[in-house]
Each structure stands twice: as structure tokens, then as C-alpha cells.
Image (cartoon, rainbow, N blue to C red):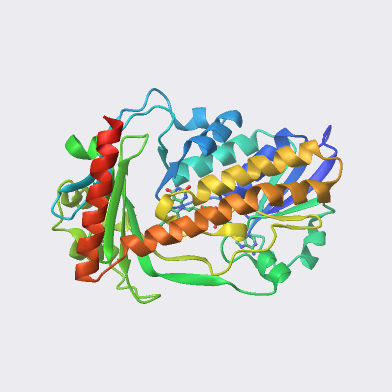
Length: 367
Ligand SMILES: Cc1cc2nc3c(=O)[nH]c(=O)nc-3n(C[C@H](O)[C@H](O)[C@H](O)COP(=O)(O)OP(=O)(O)OC[C@H]3O[C@@H](n4cnc5c(N)ncnc54)[C@H](O)[C@@H]3O)c2cc1C
């Protein structure tokens, strides 16, 4: 860090997508940044992430988008289907800047790590578990603390005096095919809704296909064989679902119970501390926007800090901009989850009829 021209220093807790994006955005606005991550190494796992246009533009401004995509993206057929393959709603998703870019989370994570390694004013310390705000002083004086320590944030729990995570009632399995799968799987995305079970898939920018399955389950239930579980759930649904499962090695299937924050936080700012990403507004993944929201938080935080002389005023402005938007997202996503996980026969039939009607109207309008 010798020869640094940075004037202010920040500690970022958590090296997930949110923390790393915040570190990069701050460093580009002349902050000296130390990132503290409890994992011993930065070898991010995960599966696919949909990156929606606003977040993608931010990644472009930060020089990350070019590290993820080369060339143009093909248009794909997307929409909502029933397990027998009948479309309830169909859209042609042109790669026009209005549709999400599908990237592997590990690839986005390593692109961020790579960009940070090139910045002389950023240090990432791994194997450091933060236990609370008091202990942070041991890592050097900081004008700003960014709590990006995820859904079970110790800093949020300390500031808000409660552990507030809610199980949504369903678990998610995620997988990525080992290789690109030819045919329909390379040109088709979207979701298929059954009774208490959903399947979704989309081609990633590297040609492989990302897929997920959600299923109503008691919290923590785990057979240990995720591939067998998803095969039992959706293995006899329409193509290309069986084809995608067959193209995915069992070891590449991960599983996690879906949670969000039970109650919305009343503020994301506390003096020199800003809550960011899942630490501030963990959401169910039904709209595929949690990481996008963390990326947007990072950009807004850096912009407000650049535009305000006082850090606490900048954080108040950050809170005013990001809290309403992200809390709307959490509510909307929760609602989609309730609709998608319905498992009562007559209600499923009514839901599907309603969705088919909406799909038909949307199709006519788009034509
Ligand atoms: C099934 C599923 C599908 C999803 N799909 C999408 C999608 O398509 N698009 C999208 O935008 N989002 C999606 N999301 C949401 C997205 O994954 C998260 O919102 C996003 O990764 C949150 O990033 P984060 O950096 O805030 O938190 P995290 O990724 O949880 O990172 C927190 C980091 O902090 C570290 N940490 C935690 N506690 C401490 C501590 N005490 N000390 C030090 N370090 C600590 C952790 O090790 C971790 O590295 C999905 C989520 C799920 C579950």
C-alpha cells in the first residue's frame, strides 16, 4: 500500500458478491479498503445467477462485464410451462439489454477477485471471522464499515438486537451441466410449475445450462443424494428437463433451504456502518435478484460517499435510496414463492388457468 493516494479507509466484512463489489466500487472512488472474510480461501461455489440490466450496467462500469462475456448472446425462448410441457406463457427473450445475463456465480466471484487483485489499495484477508463491531478495531482504524456478511450477519444482529431469519417452507436444488447441452436446452429458458415443485433453467454465457428445483420440505431435511432427490421430483417432466439432469454430475448438485428476513429492517445505516446485500435485505430467490440488489447497493453506496462530505450523511442517503427498493423486492419475491409453491390440487389448477390467461393477453400485446 505504499505510495497510496487514498484518503479514507473502509473495512468490508464479507467477500461475497456484495462485499467484493462494494470493495471495488469504493476503491475506484479513492477509498483504501480491507475486506475480512471468514472462509479460509476465496473459492466461491454456487451455480447460476441471473444478472439483470441495472446490475449488469454497474458491472460494466466497474470493468467486470467484459471479463464475463465475450461476443453476443443468443436470443432464447423463455416462459412458464406445466410439467407436461404445455406453455402457460411464452416470451422470446431477445438479448437486447432488457433481459438478464446468466453467469456462473463462481465466474462472477473470481472476476471480482481478479479486479481487486489489480488494485493496490485493496487487501482481502481470508480466515478472519468477525464476531462483532468491537473486534473490528483490531484490523486497523476505519472511517467506514460495510457489513456484507450475508443473511446471518453478525453485525446486523448486533445492531438490530435480533436474529431474524425465516424459512420460506421450500428448499432449492441447483445444478449446472458439465458441458453445453445441444438442442432445446441451449435455446430455452424459463420455469415449469407443478404442485409444490418448480423447475427453472437458462443457458449460461459459457454455453452450459444452469437449472434449479424448488420443493416444499420441512427445514433441514436432507437425504444426502441431491441428484436422486431432483430426479424423483422432476425426472419425468417435459424435455429438456430429464436431458439436463442426465447431463449434470451428481457432485455438481447443491441444496439449500430458502430463507429471507422475517421483518424488514428500519434502517441500513448506523453511524459509520452500512448494511449491504443479504445482510440488509436477504430475499427469497424467486425473482433472481438478490445478488443484483447487492451490486446496486454497492454502486449507490460508493456514489453517495463520493457526493457527501460527511460519511454519516452519505449513509443516510444510501439508506433512503436502497431500503424502499430492496424491501419491495423482498415482498414481491415472497409472493411469487407462495404462488409457485402452491400444492393444493384445485388451487394449482386455478393458478395455472389464471397464468395461462395472463400469458395469452401478454402474448397478444407483445404481438
Ligand atoms: C437458490 C438461490 C438462487 C439465487 N439466484 C439468484 C439469481 O439468479 N440472481 C441474483 O441476483 N441473486 C440470486 N440469488 C441471491 C444471491 O445469491 C444472494 O443475494 C447474494 O449472493 C448475496 O450476496 P452477499 O454478498 O450479500 O452475501 P453472501 O454471498 O452470503 O456473502 C457473505 C460473505 O460474508 C462471509 N461472512 C459471513 N459471516 C462472516 C463473519 N462473521 N466474518 C467474516 N466473514 C463473514 C461469508 O463467508 C460470505 O463470503 C439466489 C440465491 C439462492 C439461495
